Image 1: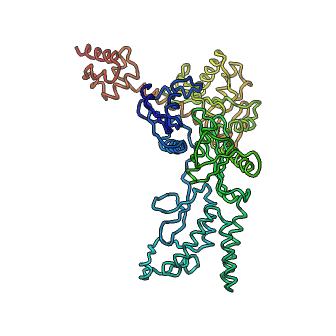
Image 2 (image 1 turned 30 degrees about the horizontal axis):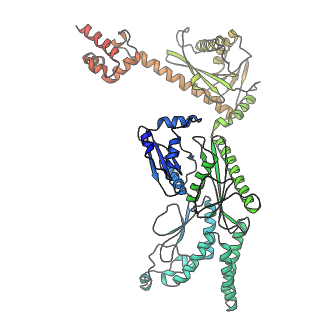
Image 3 (image 1 turned 180 degrees about the vertical axis):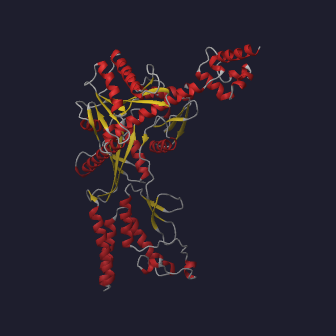
Length: 595
């Protein structure tokens, strides 16, 4: 590795770390590649994840670029392409729509999510589809444009190849396809449309006012009225934009807030004093990246995504990033400071919304609320943080077993699940079996001084509940733990010494949690019962061989299909399936018998 590092250039660029399988595990950028890569190997890292990363590095590759900003953009693209394990994860990577002005004679204007490099102009992307549609709707009201995809060459128009369509008759198009609109007039409309999309509404309004005055001077009052209506539309649209200050023109604003796991970078685009675009991205930290590093990632991603070339960039602090095409400004007061504060508020609001969404999606976030509701519905004295549920399982009286599942904080704690083989009961007696397993479970918890549940759920009605109560009485736990039974027919909830069941609302979260417990106990018990029956079903000479257990028996039968085939197998064939020691035991057993 030292020899590899010694050959690395000191120029700016991007480095890629590969593991022993040739997979990219980290991508980084640096002003000085050699110094940056060397730092991973010549100092002690406090972050445990960085230590693990360094141990996994088997190869290093670098890409040299001219400037640091080029390195940042390349790093961003490589991370999105390969998604390395130890890189910051960009959580928001949607395909946003663009407004396209097609590269053709009499260009069409439409929205698209696919960029085709054919010389067409694309504006965006728009994080808000509603905002984009508002702009397109405004454009259609101001300027009738064609929507057809015909080849409107001069030759085709001169040869009367096309006819006017419905769009012309309802006033949405001036029919350039039949020569009713000149290319010069259409191009003038396209130039105004570009200005509107870029946010330069003030310039368009100024031009239209001059045109309106010209028509009025020429006594073309109908044309002047149409222009006046367009001006009113533009002014109404402009009034709905967030106006900050008319003195601020073509500025990018970035802010960042972060916590232990995530960072949120907000972006605002300001043109002629109005915010025309705004977006926030979420970055998941992997190696305790600094706010400086994360802000650089955010700037590269958002400027690339929104195709921004603004020279002035407002930031909360100056990042360690040098680029002659960007001037970083940290405002202390005035309108630009207010812009930065607005950006920060947007980032905080986005983080708050994300946390609310995660809370709605992730049931663990609602554990307290669900358990408090269950406590209230079951009239318990304390919140049931620890719940256990029991279920018996036997088919036609064979191989009786029982299962106990454990829920903590309203979710399964599978490491605490327990199976029980019935020991003291003969025949299919569910009540006696329930008494046995409940007694064994809590006698062991008491002896081991382990925590007891606040709630016990028994799968069954009054009979099963009564059987479980006998064990609690023997152990002196009655009254100390809430215990209920749930009957399957109508989902009745039974309490000790109460013949009238409780009926919870079918949509109640309390009932759904109890049903989840019951169903999980049933699933867990059935699985164990099937396994036990499978073991009992394997009746073969293999069971008679000393030191050959159930697992080895299964492996051999799975491979050779029958005991007869196992007898015929050579020692080498047996060793391919099980260990050499067990293969020799099986081989010697059958060969000794045959001899």
